[in-house]
Amino acid sequence: MAEVVIVADREAAGRLVADEIAGLVRANPQAVLGLATGSTPLPVYEALRTALADVDVSQVRGFALDEYVGIDPAHHESYRSVITREVVEPLGLTPQNINVPSGAVDGIEHAGADYEAKIDAAGGIDLQILGIGTDGHIGFNEPGSSFASRTRVKTLTEQTRSDNARFFASKDEVPMHCITQGLGTILRARHLVLLAFGEGKADAVAAAVEGAVSASMPASAIQLHEHVTVVVDEAAASKLS
Ligand code: F6R
Image 1 (cartoon, rainbow, N blue to C red):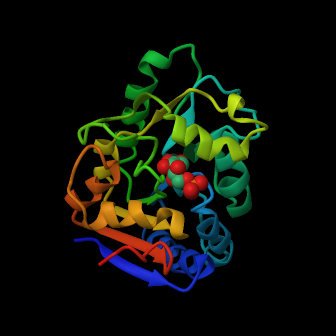
Image 2 (tube, helix red, strand yellow):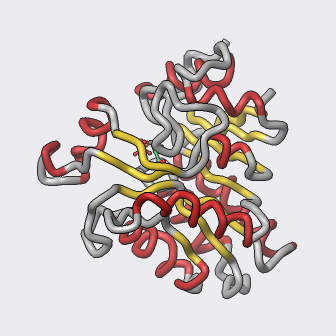
C-alpha cells in the first residue's frame, strides 16, 4: 500500500520531497533521479534550490520520463528545454549527467532501447518523481499501456493533447506522439514519489491508490511497487476513502 501524505499546499509538498531528495544526494552524491515535467513537480524543483544549496550536486544523474516526438529540442516546450530551464540550470546540475529520451524522428526506432540501456548503465533510478494525468497516465503511458512496457513511442490521447495545449500557442501545435519510459521502466525505480494537486486530479488519485489494478488506469501500477509515496493536497486527496 502506498504511503499517502496529505499536505497543506504545493509549497509544503515541494519542501517535503526536496528534503527527501537532498537526503538521498547527501548519502549518495551520484544519486539517480527520475525527473517528471508538467506543472506538478515545479514546487519540488523550486524547493530543491534551497534544499540542495549546500550539497555537492556535480555528480547527480537524472533521467526525464518522456519527450515529444518530432519537436525541435530547442523548442521552448520540448522536455529537453523544460528540464534544462527548470532543473539543470537553477540547481547547477552537470548537463552531461541529465538524460532526456531522444524525440528525433531520425533513429526513433532504437531511441527507446538506447534510453533503457542508459538507465541500466546508471544502475537504475533511485527516486522517480511522478505527476498523474486526469486520465490516470504516468509518464505518457496512456490507458491501455502494458505494465511490462519499456521506453517506447506512444500516441498522445486527445485528452492529453488538450490538457497540454496550455503550454503551446494552440492544441494543433501539441505533437501527436511522444517517447516515454514504460510502466515497467517506472516500476523498476527504487522509490516512486507521485504528486498531485487540485480537485481535477482527485478521481485519478483515488483510482490509482485504491482502485482496481488495471491497464485502463496506468497509475494503478504503483500498487505493485513496494516503496511508493503519494504526496497530495486536500483537494487531490478528497476522493480517497
Ligand atoms: C510529464 C509526465 C506526465 C505529467 C502529467 C501531469 O513528464 O510524465 O505524466 O506528469 O501529464 O501533468 P501536470 O503536472 O502538468 O498536471
